[in-house]
Image (cartoon, rainbow, N blue to C red; front, side, top):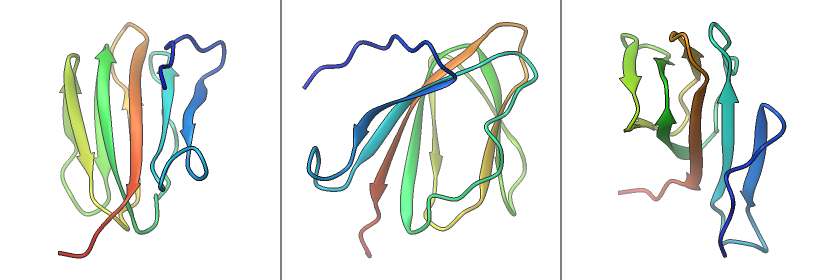
Length: 104
């Protein structure tokens, strides 16, 4: 499958899990300066952000704020509340990928 990263909304799904995938979900997010996605958790899933444009802060509960910039990536462990905020003056664009975590 291939996907164009064109999204008229703030967030657009790319992969939506079964039956499309074995459990992975992903989407494209566009945040205007000063905006955030809001605190949430992906439950027992782990999440990766691929930063395409702009910069911001990854706020991960119980950890210091992590600043990031494009091109870059952010990892969010399972069962962790988190938020992403655009701290720049340009639109922040990233792709998120959420997948079931496997026990080690």
